[in-house]
Image 1 (cartoon, rainbow, N blue to C red):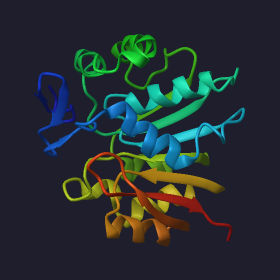
Image 2: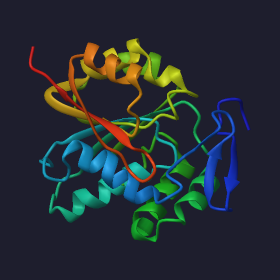
Image 3: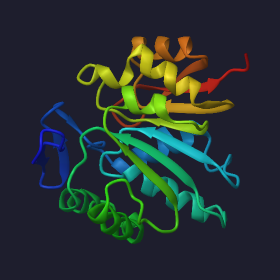
Length: 225
């Protein structure tokens, strides 16, 4: 593997853990339920879904968040593709992704399509049924190069204590700059410096109940200037 690949070990044979950041890719309780609580409910989804809706994400990981959003989008009755843009510096291999996603049979039909497209091209140019793009590389550089505004953000980097680069002030400023007025962001963390960085980036920040063993999480609303 190159130095830019994900470096994994497996807990209980099914949960991938990053050895680079010493952090699991999803909740040890139930990763899919965590995604629904933190990223879908945290952004008031699927209630806000509408044609052209754009979700952006920091930290693609296993692709579980994309799968949950994609399934919710189609279940909500939308008949145009969801737009989903994610940023990933250390992509895992297709075989690793497939192994991780076997834990979530509810999204299996979507996972098969994702893994197949990922094996062909990690930017997901061949994935059908969703307008998905994974931007590879350091988001501190690549996000500033984008020319869109997202409706909702999934902030899902590894723990801020172990991966502070993905939560730093400059990057949160770029998140704010790439969010529509009235757009939202959600994350599993309630770390004080993350909340302050979001506030400084133009968001009204709220701490709410977290998922599972996490007492609190953070939601954010992009305020009008």
